[in-house]
Length: 104
Image (cartoon, rainbow, N blue to C red; front, side):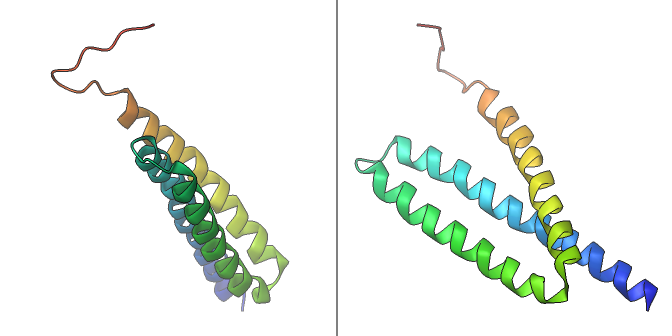
């Protein structure tokens, strides 16, 4: 009984990480795409509805296991936020060949 609880907790944590990568990676993608868009509000609104909908549905299906699994999933979600922030910062800081950047 105890080992199955640990396995479910690990799975809840991994699910939280996957949801966080999806949510915050999707946010980064939305910001990148909306910069070049003529109507960025559509990108932000539709992306927000889609991302929040998917995450809430997944949290809903994780919650019947108990509030402990939901908290562990949320911790994984928050960990993924820091992972995505770190990765996207390193991607955004790479200079593009042939382009000169300067401070205005």
